[in-house]
Image 1 (cartoon, rainbow, N blue to C red):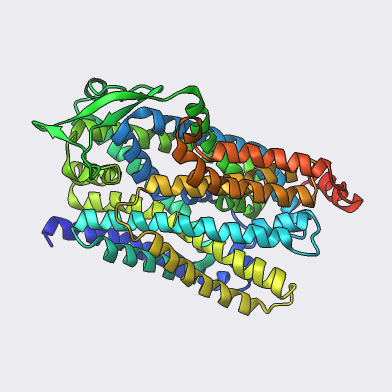
Image 2 (tube, rainbow, N blue to C red):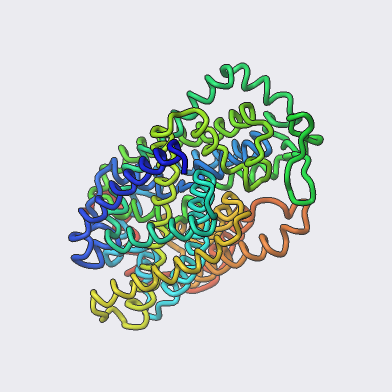
Length: 525
């Protein structure tokens, strides 16, 4: 290992030790009971709520996946995705946060998303609880796999070591950290990691622009590629049978730009719909100490999100200008290392290590959230809520959650085993799953008095199944079916909820009364 590489490694290890320290600091409070472990006792302040929500949401996808898409095929896909996410962030904080904070307290003081949905409809037979927990388990396991891919790519690119070894090492670190600290440690470290992430993005953005000769030069270089800077077409890298982009005299080859039509733009913007259904963000709404603090959280989260997304997209474009034919970036999967390559080339080793910690920060922020929520879905919802009918010993619930953490991590490692995996594609599938399964039912549960249990069950099943059907069966047909599966699945789920609710028995007076309390103006602590 060279001296420069050793300096990078030392800087990253130092960062990891700080993260572990946070976990140990909060460990005692986390172990007190399952509510503290899974929701932090509803004690989060506005800054921690906002920053931890965004850090846990964005993951290593923000620093590797999104810049990689921009580097590989230009602005359109990355930019419309970023716009959809920015709008979705603001709207979610604006209309969902306050109502969910209040309603989750009214509906049996719910501490997980499945808990809330089940309590919202006064379930005796916990069907909603079971369906919610199973979908969370499936999609978060996929999400965890994407985070482990990020760890493997990051460390193998930095240190020239085995992808599989580094991926497993990253998975073990995240697993141990989540074991120790629970939700409070996760949220506190996520706040710190959100700060690291945005500093890392802005640092590389500024230095990269300067190294490329300024904004004008970056634009001039990118404009030479057909469709690269267009929002209505995609650049088309010329690749061989193995998917490696071809080059001539050091210049990468591109074919004619491909179309990026109105329907594709709408479906890409629908990334924003996913926010209404992602548990890691919804949990932060439930965990804030006072609903009155959500206004400040909304502002903080939106500003962070807009700056980070814009920086990530532009970094991909800068990378294409500085490293147009870099061998390590010559495939769709390899392009996701553009942030790593830029950091190593633009910064001294120690600073590069700290910036690399930004990627590690993003990955840890998300993977610990995914593991913790998936574990709570099994231990808190399936085991305690269904099998033991709320009579389970609290310590047994927490021990089971740790066993589930281990099993989920193992499956996540299996999903991440293919080193040619594209982080963006893995995340987009899981994001669609959450958005279509939980987004419509969450919105209708919070804002439509007439929605009933039957409608909720049917809508969740319709949305979740449609994501698989569209992605695996319809999308390969091409044409209109090639759009992002979240959009049609979200619409289909919404229609099913309305139709089934209106054609079955109306909610009871007690359920309606709770709905009206949650919709009231009195503040609930």
